[in-house]
Length: 350
Ligand SMILES: Cc1ncc(C[n+]2csc(CCOP(=O)(O)OP(=O)(O)O)c2C)c(N)n1
Ligand code: SF4
Ligand SMILES: [Mg+2]
Image (cartoon, rainbow, N blue to C red; front, top):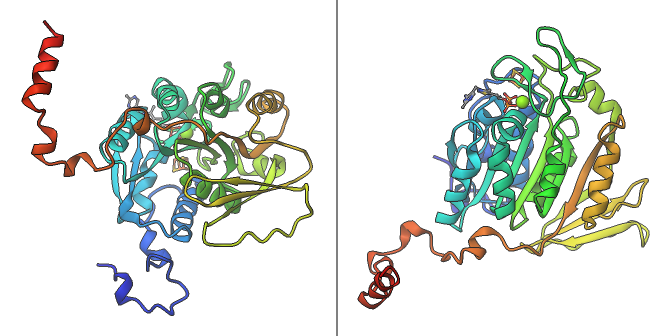
């Protein structure tokens, strides 16, 4: 049993604002291949939740099927979790966040789980704005079933035992933008600092936050010419900005020249600070985001960062006017309709 805040030494610098150490955010030892990008993403989920002082018990972990979907076992041991069916995680997530508005949902999916079998569920989750962080651990293959091409594999890519992929890839960020998603980001498992800051921003967001992370499969898809490999990603990563998440209690220390920094206030009172890099990119301009993805999709670069943000859209529980109290805590008296309202309902069917 982990010690509570009162039992811990408050002078311990390793303890966060809710009295927990980083080790309290860990999961079971991984059974994934050594060097798999998915492991490095799990480490950044642990770091982000610890640094944000989120109580692990407030998080629900959701996944589908795949190596990526196994990974929730390897972080946040103290959270609830549901490892669902291949491509069907969004349905389970929708039910969970409607039934209990007090939980934060983190979904981990794969490119097969999301862009192949799960593409329909993915799109409908986005148009409903289901409040959750939706991570796609994107390696271009079905890792768990031994490396077949997924729907995000590059056209013309060659894999030794599989052959040539004749089909155009699905770009999950572009799909998210088209479906009106209010938070679309892309990162690379080989860039852990950026992954962590984007995850913190996603956790501060009120609706669906899609984080597409290129996550190399070292066993089936890590040859230098693959756009989902470590070598290619490291050589071609093109960050749009330096992104830093600042908690609401910290004052923002702006040490950049005016005009070089953009700030975005998040729903939980935290702030996102963008330092422009080479180009003048505005993550609030949806059409510019689409154009940028279109122009760079086959351009030999891996564009990373926050691609689009729009905090104005209502999330699903607001649209459905769900009560704040988790449904499980509603008493029978509250749930039972009055005689009059029942009669009104019956009348509507006559
Ligand atoms: C309905 C159904 N169809 C097919 C499968 C077989 N299957 C299991 S995992 C998987 C693909 C996983 O690929 P991805 O989501 O990219 O995850 P990765 O293993 O690459 O992380 C498939 C096709 C299944 N489990 N269920
Ligand atoms: S097969 Fe690929 S995706 Fe699966 S654990 Fe190994 S490296 Fe990771
Ligand atoms: Mg995959």
